[in-house]
Amino acid sequence: ELQTGAIIRTLTNSLTSSFSLYALEEFPNGNLAGAYSSSIGIVVWNVNTGSVVRTITGFSGTIYGMKMLSNNILITCGNERNIRFFNTTTGTSLWTIDNLDSPVWNIDILPNNFLISGSAPSIVRVFDLP
Image (cartoon, rainbow, N blue to C red; front, side, top):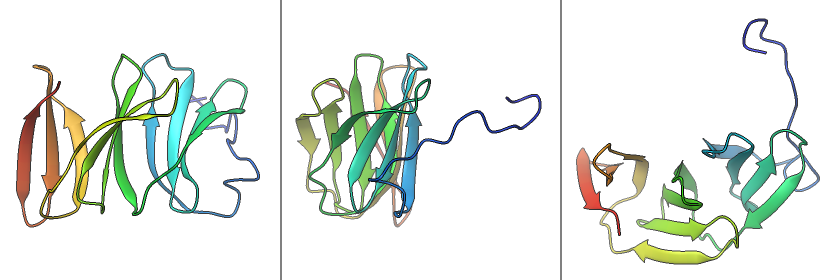
């Protein structure tokens, strides 16, 4: 509870108990959350029950940021030097923005439906979302 700072639930399972988590994202429905572990991939939890809903794998590098869209699309960025889009219902990769010249440290969605990303050295890119 935010009022008391008490832990309501700890989301863990045998997959994630011994690995570091690098990125977290709340899903718009408020019932699911995603976390990235370098050894597993993205684990999607039901925050009400603590159960794992899905695991998304296939990453060759560390994910530094995630952003969830309202249409069940999860966007990821990291040291793979790309931005990837996933369907969280099926866990499948939808498309990728490739060939970025440096790791992508963070992403966000602007109110006009543009995707903004931050990379080193001091590179900010704005993309039109498909």
